[in-house]
Image 1 (tube, rainbow, N blue to C red):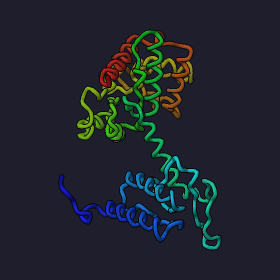
Image 2: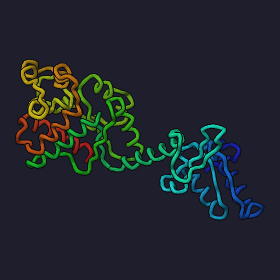
Image 3: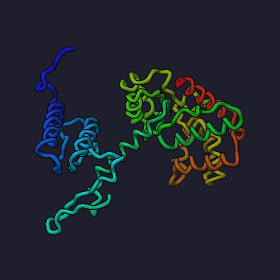
Length: 315
C-alpha cells in the first residue's frame, strides 16, 4: 500500500475531509447548539459522492439543526422528501418564498426534485438479474403477448425471471446495456434486422459489451422472404388479420402480392394515420379471445425459437 498526501488527492476529496473535520470539531465546541446554514455544499463532489455526503450532513444534524440549499438532484434523497422545502423568487417585488410543501409557482423550481425521483425510479427499474433489451415499447408488448399465448398452449415462452426493457429505439440499446452491465446484471438484446438494427448491432461498443449469443436478431427467427424483417414480421399473417377484424385496416391483397416487403412499410403506406401502438394494442385485445392456435405454424415456431434462444442466452 502506498501513502498519498492529502494535498495530492482530488479537490472534492480534500474538501470533503476538510469539511467534516472542521465542522465536526466546531459543532462540539464553538458551534454547539448552533443552526448550520450551508450554501450549495458538495459542488466539487462526484454525483454519487454527493449522495453519500447527505449521510455526513445527517450526522451533523444529530447535534445541530442543519439547513442547506442545493440545485443538485443528488443532494435530494427520495426518502427525505418530507424535509424538502422549495425556495423560489419569481420577482424581486414579491421577494423570496419558501413553500411548506413540495409546491412551487414556477414548475422549473421542482426540477431537482423531478431529477432525483427520476434517477431513483430508473435505479428501481433495473432490479432484475436477467434483462432483455428491445428497441421500443411495442416490441415489449409483442414479446409479452406472444409469450403468454405460447405458454397457454404448452409452448416455450419467455422465462418469467427475465425483465423486458424497452430502450426507445435501436440506437439507445447500447446505452441501456451499458447501464445494466454496470450493475452486474445479465443482459441480452433483441434488434430488428432493418438498417437501424444493423447499425446498432455492429457498433464497436455494443459488440464489446455483449457476446454474439446474447445479441438476437429478428432475421434469425423469422420464416419468410422479407430480407430485413422487424418484430412485426414475426406475426405478419396474424397482424394482417387482426388489423382487418379489430381496426378495419384491410391490406391483405397488397401483403399477399408483396410478400418480401416489411409489413410495417405496407401499413404505413396504405393506412392513413397508421400507428404501431394501435396495431399492437389490437393484437393484445385479439389475444383475449384467441390463442397461439390461431396463429400460423411458422409464427409459432419462430416465436418459440426466439424465446428458447433468449432464455438460453440468459441462463
